[in-house]
Length: 64
Image 1 (cartoon, rainbow, N blue to C red):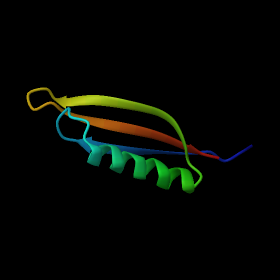
Image 2 (image 1 turned 45 degrees about the vertical axis):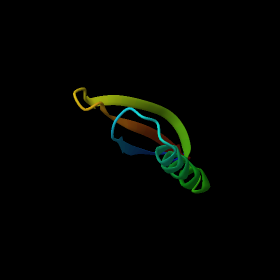
Image 3 (image 1 turned 135 degrees about the horizontal axis):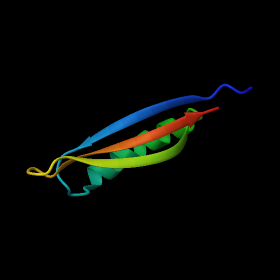
């Protein structure tokens, strides 16, 4: 039986604008995880504050 690890990253993004800074930060998270042997298995977003258009990005990882 193989040992499988699961993990979660939460990226807190203010506003709904997809800025270059946000894209660079998310790319850095993915690159760092991939280099450590993690595989991105799912993503999800959630609007946390509709008045200020504040949302979170959830990255779900698996490592065998």
